[in-house]
Image (cartoon, rainbow, N blue to C red; front, side, top):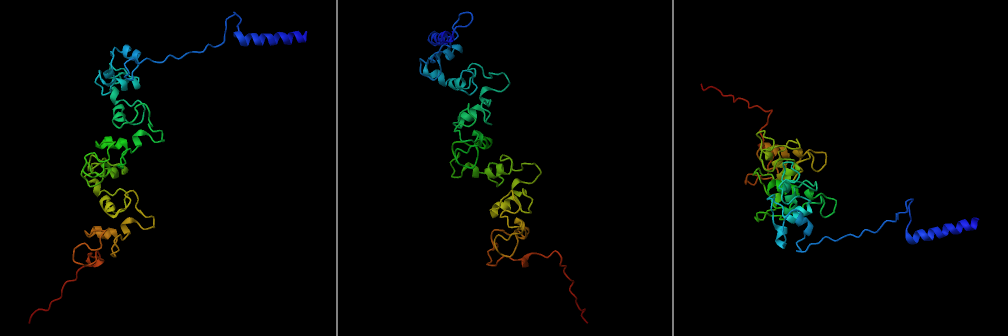
Length: 288
């Protein structure tokens, strides 16, 4: 009986493998292979025919580059973003499709496209850096920062004046654009905090030297002891003339130049008025 049972089981397995396993109702439960049907693009414009038909776009290669809803996105871009090419604001949230940020990278769809980045991928080149934080033209400004100051994110020298966009001074406060961003200043406003003091005259790191003086000396505007030698920047003697940077600034001297007055003399503390010495009155003898 055992041999018969084993034989019957084997036969059953062979049967099931060949014809499919039947359920209690006699239906074949073996999964059928699903054949994927390729999307047809008869006019070779990059948009499937059925999508064009769905939105009544017509046919032809030129359809891909048209912008029927005037949202700044072409039909092929709307297709790639899964948006409605006949509606300016697909999700009706009050923001036009071009100004949406579909890939959540900090750039609008239109900005992504202008910067030649993918509007459907937050990290187009898959390097671990978000598109908005990339510096694709190597001008010291990120893609996001370029749009803030109105420069071209794929051209390091947008106005072709020989100065990289990051080194430009958009608001005319003598602080370069890239430095303003590093200090979290507004590169479009010469007095970012509206306190009546220009950004160049502020003292970001509170070390007694203005931002302008620090820039002149090549110091780090974000650290009061740029070289980490235990001496505050204001007490350093950058030009080696015996005067601290702070004293030079107070005296109207250039802390980066040991001779400031074209007189051949080295700056020293003899020219600094003493704050503790008072002038004694001159004694005179009355004439007989």
